[in-house]
Image 1: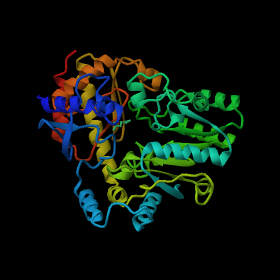
Image 2: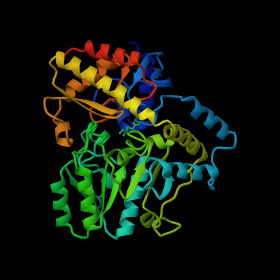
Image 3: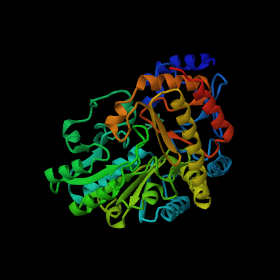
Image 4: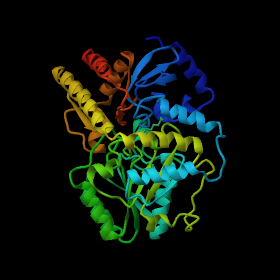
Amino acid sequence: MIHTKSQQLFERAQNHIPGGVNSPVRAFKSVGGTPVFIKKAKGAYLFDEDGNRYIDYINSWGPMILGHAHQPIIDAIRAKAEDSTSFGAPTEVEIQMAELVKKMVPNVELIRMVNSGTEACMSAVRLARGYTGRNKIIKFEGCYHGHADSFLVKAGSGVATLGIQSVPGVQSYVAQDTLTAPYNDIEEVVRLTQAHPNEIAAIIIEPVAGNMGCIFPATGFLNSLKKVCIQNNIVLIFDEVMTGFRLARGGAQELFNIQADLITFGKIIGGGLPVGAFGGRKEIMQHIAPLGNVYQAGTLSGNPIAMIAGYTLLNELNTNPSIYQALDKKTKVLCEGIHQILEQKHIPHTINQLGSMMSVHFGAHRVVDFESAKACDNTLFNKFFHHMLESGVYLPPSAYESWFISQSLVKEDIQQTLEAVAHFSL
Ligand code: HOZ
């Protein structure tokens, strides 16, 4: 494959943008090489500036669940934009969006729109602190809840990819209020709650982690967390930025039949535009301004173009729930195929898959938390990544990220992907 234009653009970008990118993982720093610059995408395919085509397994890190440039979304955005792109005043489409989310996620009683998953999680934690009058939170090692100060402690995603141990600029008094426990370790959570009685405002978790690869909650773990929260008057926050509307209409809450107090959303909720949201129990949500004094605001929050894009996508998911079975089925075919080929090649690996989220880790051990994810062979992952890229398959450029499958992916794409895996050699 020729990447001349991407190389030129990357060089040019580095003169103006830190590292040449507006979000660190995109820089290919851990896998090495030059990031491909994308020109356009349609359905399951990305096309770069050099004219190369890739089967896309990132799907904008989640939002493109129905594939790129999905026609009803494009049409809805076009039509809405004719009426102007922002008002900074309330609109009906915001109500439609809230009503639809409440239908899909029934324990959301009130919901506030923001502009990103980071904002959603940051605001949910502020709300939990304001509601409980406590300062500390518990998060899990390898989970990533965006780049607000409180979350940049033992974080996954780009923080893990770049191997950043502690983030300069996060004041120590902020970081010390973030307690961490290994994912799936309920004993440690209990120990922390006992060591800090009446000090913990919230436990925040990705109910299926997608920022250290894809990691599942152990059986009963989420239920145990909920019990601990009830016993200690702690607000349970599910970060469903990745899992929301992806694993089921009602996200991980529906899949595991468990209800958090607050839920954060991002990615799919914006249909590819910058949207996040947080919502949940009215008793807590009514502390948000202007009902209460926990302040949170945004000029572009509830932006009409972003709302119509998200609404159009959610509406399609809501009316066609069979999409979720279809996604699960094709993701399983892909995972089983990759597993068989790697096994034949005697390459030790773990493939974690749930619905349309999955990841491939290289190593002989099970991958159940951040420690086991970190113990994998990332040098091999990097080699695999580049082999796949050169074969026209676009994977996340880090072993600490989940793959996201779209409804546009067809049998032939899976076949081409498996052929590429078959040609991989150590
Ligand atoms: N932190 C994102 C994935 N977990 C990557 C965002 C991006 O580069 O777009």
